[in-house]
Every structure is written in C-alpha cells, then in structure tokens.
Length: 352
Ligand code: GLY
Image (cartoon, rainbow, N blue to C red; front, side, top):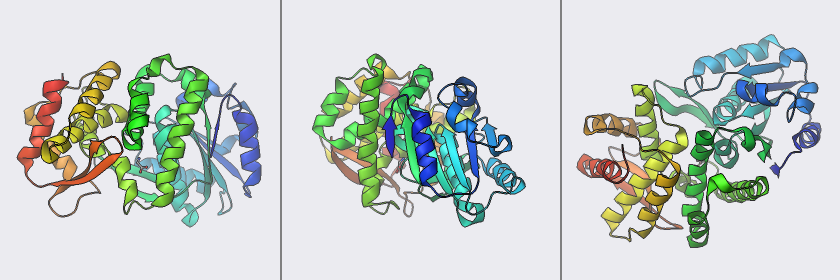
C-alpha cells in the first residue's frame, strides 16, 4: 500500500512493473477519467492499449451483477488471460465491482486499486471486500479478494465534491471512535473542510494503517474485523431505504453517520454507559452532515433491510456497539420496539 501526494504516475509505473502480467486492463470511473485524463492519470493511461480501457459511469445502481457481466464480456472479447492485470480507478463502487470482476474472471486475476474518493481511500479499496448490490440489498453478492497493491494519491481529494468528501469523512470518524480516546479527541478538534493537502495525506495514511492492522488480524471477518461495521447495520438499512424511496438517496457515509448515532444510543441505553461520546458524535455530525428525514412508517422497512444483514444470526439483529472510544461491544437485539427507539432517537436529536 502506498499513500502519496501528486506522484501517481511514477508510483503506478513502478507498481505495475513489479507485478508480472501479460496484458494491462483499466476500469476507470467516468468522472475521474474526464477530470484527470490529462493530469494524474496521463502516465498510466499512456501504458494502455486503447481497447483495454473501460470508462464506467459509477453509481450504487450500476454496482450490479449486470455490470459485472458486461465487464467479464469485455475481458473475454479483449483476450484477457489468467495472467492479465486489472487496475480499478475510482471510488468504492469501482473498486468493489472491479475487485469482484477480477476475483471471478478465470478464477481470479490480479488487481491494483487506485481509490479516488476519501471513502475508497480510507475504507473500500483496502481490506479485500469486493462485491455488488442485488435486489436493493447492498453488497449481498461478493467475495473477499485482496488487491496486489493499493496506490493512494490524495491529489484526487482536491476535485472531490464537498458532500462526497464529507461522506468519506464518516469512515474517518468511525475509525477515530474505534481507535480509542486519543484518536477520538483529535477527531473532535478537526474540521475536515480546513485541512491542507499534506494534512489529508497524514490522515489518510493513519486511517489506512489502522484499517490494515485490523484486516491483517482477521481478513475474513470472523472476529475483530466486525468492529469496522460500526454504524453499518442501521446505516446500510437506512441507505437502502433512501435508494428505494429515490427522493434524496443518502451517500454511504451519510448513512453510516446516522447508523453510528443510533448504534451508540442503543449501546448506552442497553448497557447504561456514558452518553458523552454519543453527544460529541451528534455534534460532529451536525457540523458535517445534513439531517435525513424518515418517519415511523419507514421503521418496518428499515428493520426489514436489517434482517438481511450478513452479520445476523437467527432472528436477532446484531451490531457493533461502542461503550466508549476504543471499547466495542457486540450487541444482539430481538425486540423490534428497542430497535425503533434507536430510530426515534436519531429523528428527535438530529433527523429532518
Ligand atoms: N468496510 C468494512 C470492512 O472493510 O471490513
């Protein structure tokens, strides 16, 4: 893994040269391609046969099995072999989809991820989770499949739209909560919109090191890695609801921020732990995210989405609670009324 600033071309050339392969293929997000083809991506694109580039319009909708099929057909048509290398350039949709495509093509070809959004830099592109959405359920089809390399050039953050940057920042907040009191205190003092390029590079590097340390201990998520799902049980469900309703679909990190508020609230109400961190989190979220409006008629749908969560066992909804920064607790709830209290809390303190 490399975290760099403004030297993508040089790093890419050396990373690609170090991985034995016959043909190089690139899957690239269309917006990133248009913004950076003459800049940060110029060197890597110049290494490529033109038909070995797939410019992809990425969205949660296009992170689908149909898109994966299109990409497999492209690789077959272009003669990709088991020794070919696929480079995924873009946000989490591109790295999840491209990783999944690579994992199945000829039972697995090598990949490099070049994440271009904050969310993909600090979370999606590292750790080897790949997959697609299906029947409105996020990441329901997928495999664990490690990229050979992740090359992170934080220069891409300067062209990321602020709401997208802040969406990625929710995963930084999550890591700070998981990391312990020092990292949480630092997070409470940080204004993400005031950070310089060099400061971003340090923050991204710290976050990737934190995530990699957890993935190294538990790649297949049988234990420790589950803590990285903080905020994601409620978050994924509310995100799925927002996509189903189509009015104002939530970005992933915006949904995770809501999920973290609800999951911290439920932890403190079930275990009787301090609410100090919860209210600090609410404050940080107020500063960085807009409220999201759902109502009590949506509760059964949200709980319905949660029942598909991969972390559940039996009829219970399982999620990661947080007693205090750095101290997670596995929580299981069967009583829907308790889950609904969590949904009420968000609406009362923050929701639109
Ligand atoms: N996004 C959580 C994980 O990679 O485990």
